Length: 115
Length: 115
Image (cartoon, rainbow over all chains, first blue to last red):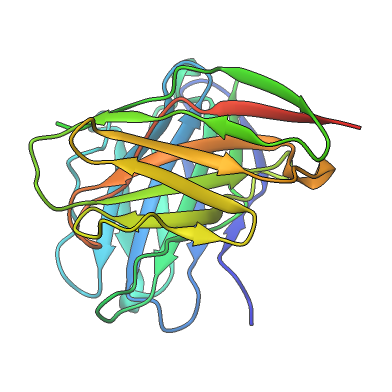
């Protein structure tokens, strides 16, 4: 079956512009995660959605970052007024429901470059 | 907060050799989950192996096995009969509660398998 998909695969934007990154999880997966991978900070957890519950936003680096998940499926990560330090690969992962379901399945990521 | 440390930024071995990647972590939790993920140049994160902290038996998956030392908070990955396709970044990751938290990753080890 189809895996986690992310779009766009690459995005170049000018400093100060807003960007939206999209994640399509595996069908039936109720948990969805966003991570950021950068040279300086490594892999960082950003936000977690479980079904229709309010998300855990504890990892968002600033109030310029927000995320939503519509209908418990597709998620968008929005970065407002982008800064050069936002340049990174943004990874999305999903996980199936049920006890004993550990594995997070990752998408290929979106490489964001802020110029 | 949890921390994960991978002390080997890069390792290089010959094909067919056995290699061990180190990982230590710090947590006050008594029950948790540990993972090794592989990230080839394609950026796709792939789960290699997982270990539940309450299980004493070390996990194995074909050529991959772990040495889990709970008291020492150590979780090393052994790759036997290494293959060229094993060349990738390897990340050790910690999860506090099943699914309720994002993964905490180490900085990664770049493993190069030489022909």
